[in-house]
Image (cartoon, rainbow, N blue to C red):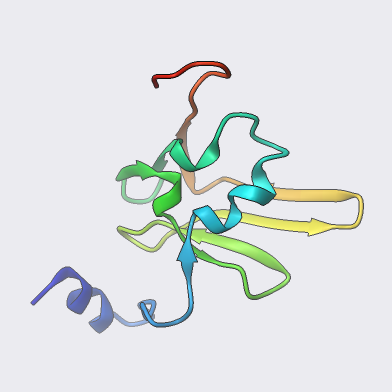
Length: 107
């Protein structure tokens, strides 16, 4: 049994065919907030502690906002809503966000 099979059997588990995309889908919207390239940032999940690139997040952007979930435990890491004249960003599910310094080549 794969990890995917195990997740699928859990009550309330997310279905991988539900139309989510990866973290690259929200990178353009967040570019105005995060000056460095966000897709290469390292993100650590507050719920499970796993780390990985921002681009690996599972992202749903079908509603009025965007939700990004941890690919390991499916906890919500990011909520983003754009309204006329304002942006709302909730990163409370992210324990740590490591960005490359502006102008640096290495992290």
